[in-house]
Length: 153
Image 1 (cartoon, rainbow, N blue to C red):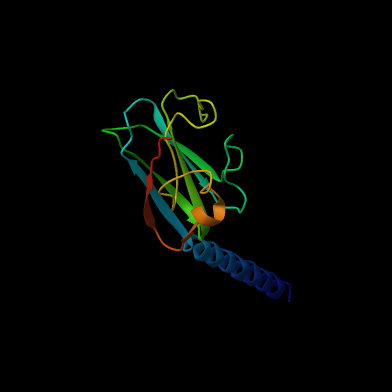
Image 2: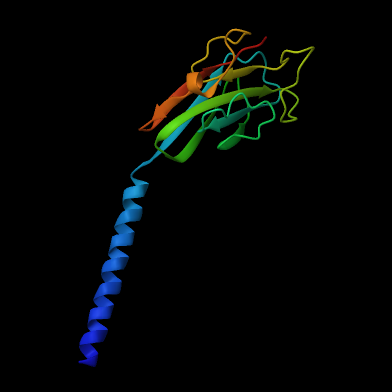
């Protein structure tokens, strides 16, 4: 009788373990990569900062405090790229900064940035076309590549 209780307990523990391992496998099946590139940089000074966002009202984020993930990449021949891995499916937006002096900040003249910036789904930025998450966002449901246009104001 005692052996049967032990065998039953072992079987329960094993079946729970199998359930959890298959659950984690299913979750891994829902992870994707996003490769983001930018070209047309006006020079190869500094680095490009790629900030990834996944929440409404997270951009604009001039002080880079609301991002989901952030990566920095070197520049070669006026281009740069980075790959974000293991991203769950969902809505994302990308902001790039051509950080020429590598201080991690958007340097500004009187009001406007003096370094290149860009957002997913944006070809231009202006007073009537300010960046926001809703317009910049895209759905990630597979591995994808996005090219972001750099804008110098």
